[in-house]
Amino acid sequence: MDEFLIENGFTQKEASIYLCTLEAGELPISLVARKTNIKRTTAYLTIESLKNKGILFVSIKKGIQYVAALSPETLLNRFNQ
Image 1 (cartoon, rainbow, N blue to C red):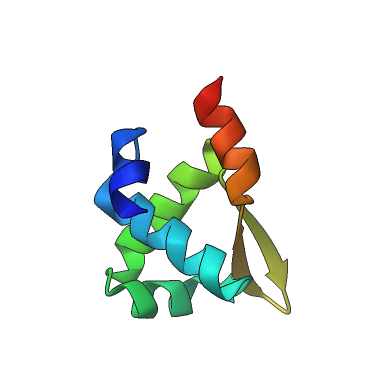
Image 2 (cartoon, one colour):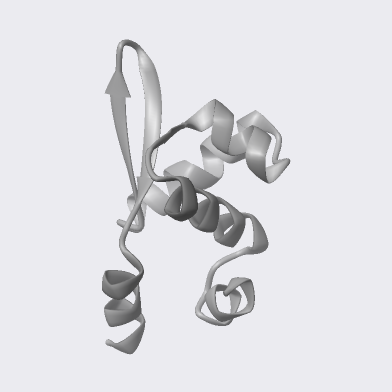
């Protein structure tokens, strides 16, 4: 799946973060950084980039930022367009 995402314009870090959030559902950004072994500041920047592309969604609950991924079906439709 990583290779498919990278072939369609994702960086390695974007692919890792997308797949992590897809697998786990909604997670705090700090946990996404830990699970993907990406520095937290880099994770925040990468998540912001994916959010701007409409691939990830960020919400705030009790002052903590959570991230969730766009469904694979919707993402695949975007790639096909």
